[in-house]
Image (cartoon, rainbow, N blue to C red; front, top):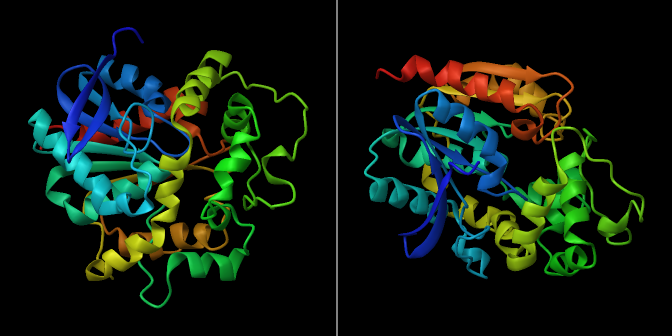
Amino acid sequence: MEKIQHRIVQVNGINMHVAEIGSGLPILFLHGFPELWYSWRHQLLSLSARGYRAIAPDLRGYGDTDAHPSASNYSAFHIVGDLVSLLDLLGLDRIFLVGHDWGAVIAWYFCLFRPDRIKALVNLSVEFHPRNPKRKPLASMRARFGDDYYICRFQEPEVEEEFARVDTAILIKKFLTSRKPGLFRLSKEVGFRGSGHKPIPIPTWLSEDDVNYYANKYNQTGFTGGLNYYRAMDLNWELTVSWTGEQVKVPVKFIVGDLDPTYNTPGSREYIHNGGFKRDVPFLQEVVIMEGVAHFLNQEKPEEVSQHIYDFIQKFSNI
């Protein structure tokens, strides 16, 4: 880990923290919520050891990267703009892209907006969601899953106050160690204190040091930056009307755990396996379902995920 280099660079009008190791063809790793560049620590070491240049920024609003308070500054165009600006600063024309959770969502947008910059994509957990021209995403979610669905609850400003009433390390443990494949709901009555004061066992793939790394960063920054990605979902819908019906046209490998709530969201399995996914992502080449694995698969199964990434991108390393 001490070989990973860290620096702050100026991109798209913000200061961005970037972790980087290795030389060779570049791989850009995009983290999700509530994570940081740190969630890719295993892949940075593994892929750099195999001859790649592994790059993992803290995305806008996270960690040591600047955070705007307003959700209007977190559109997909802002985030992808940050990343294109980063590639330009680093002198990188085309890259391999790897995303997880919100990082996967941003990766889909990146491939829609600038496919010329992507050699191939490996996305984890979140499949492509084509734009529904008839209804905004939040209205759709409220109608299908109710107001207690976590994305709907994350729209409310009181959520930060709820987070603040729970020790940050406990909050991080609850997120990272959850293995409930059903819909994640957050009732106002229970909030994040639902499990009371019972200790949360840490799995073998996570350490107290790992939890504390996340907790210390979030204690400094709060969670608003990460929550703003959810709060900009309807804005993204409005801004991307010109991409309605557009396909993702880069080579793609998709990996998800069978215990992941995203995979178990009503309609997701059917979309992934019954032709919808391949219709919208015509160069989808591989779908991997990891058995007994939950949402944070790049940390839960780091060696397997790193191998999956390597096996796919090396096919395109001479292009």
